[in-house]
Image (cartoon, rainbow, N blue to C red; front, side):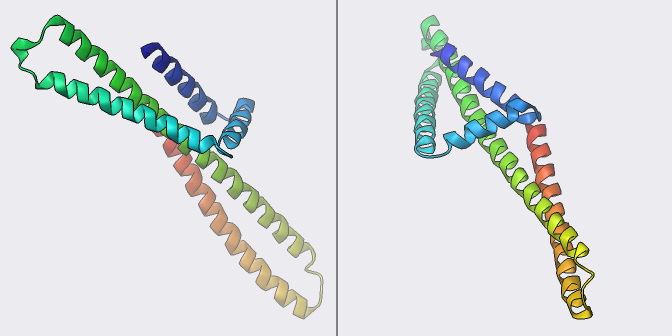
Length: 175
C-alpha cells in the first residue's frame, strides 16, 4: 500500500512539473485534464479522494489510539505500527494536497488562456475600429466612443491577465 502511495505521489509531482513549465507536454496535460473533468470524471475523482480521506482519518484514529496508551505498555510491535500508520497518514495527506494543487493549477492555466484570447479579440476589434475611422463625423464620434470603451476594456482585461498571471506565479511559487 505504501508503494502505491509513493507511485501516486510521484505521478502527481510529474504532472505538476509538466503544468508549471510551458512545454508541448503542458498542452497535452491540460487537454487530458479537460477530458478528465468532463462526464463522470469529477465524480470518480471525488469518490477516490473521499476514500483516501476516509482511510487517512482511520489511520489518524489508530495513531491517536496508540498514543493514548501509557508509554510503559507500548511494545515494539506497537511502535512499528505507530511508525507505519504515521507514514501512511502523511503520504495520504500529501497525495490529497498534490491533487488539490493540480486542480488549481489546471484552473488557473485555463482561466489565463481564456483571458488571453479575449484580450486578443478585443485588440483585433480595436484595430478594425481604428482602420474604419475614415468615415463621416457622426461615424467618427460613434467609433471614437467605441474605441474608448474598447480601450478601457483592454486595460481591464490586461489588468485581469496580470493578476491571473501573478496568481499563477504565486501558485507556482507555493509548489
